[in-house]
Length: 163
Ligand SMILES: [Zn+2]
Image 1: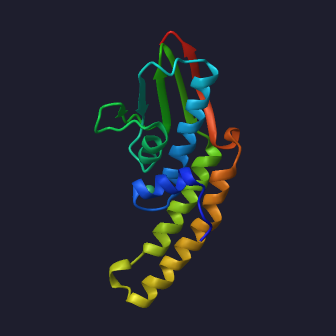
Image 2: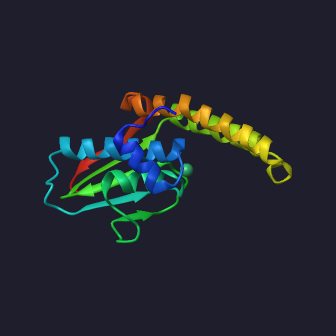
Image 3: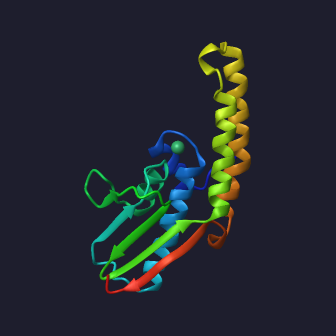
C-alpha cells in the first residue's frame, strides 16, 4: 500500500476506510481554504461550511476544515451537487468537483459493484481475493487524487466578498 500524505491518512482514519470521495472532499476543502486565504478573509472570523450532498466527502471536508456537523460549523444541505461552500469574515467561496473527478470516483463505484456482486454467497477465500483487488485499485487511484492539480479536480463556482 502506498503511504498516504499525512492529511489524507488523517481523513481515512476519521472516515474508517480509504475511498475516492473522502479524498476529494479533502481536495475541495483545501482548495476552498486557499481561495479564502487569497481573498484575505480574516482568520479571526468564524469559519462556516456547507456541503451539498451527503457522501464520504463530508468526512474529508471535516478533517481539513476542522468544522463538524456535530458542533454545527458544517451543514449538509443536499441539493445534488458535489459542492462545498465556505464562508468567513464576509467572504464566501464555493467549489465543486469537476467532471473528471466525478468520473474517477464513478469508475471506482462501478468497480465496487462488480466485486461486491453476490458477496453474501462468497466464501472467505473469494472475499479475500476481491478485497485485495479493491485495495490494489485504490493504490492506483488514490495517489492520482492526492497529486492532481486543483484545476483537474476542482471548479470554482463562486468567489465573492460581502456574503
Ligand atoms: Zn468512503
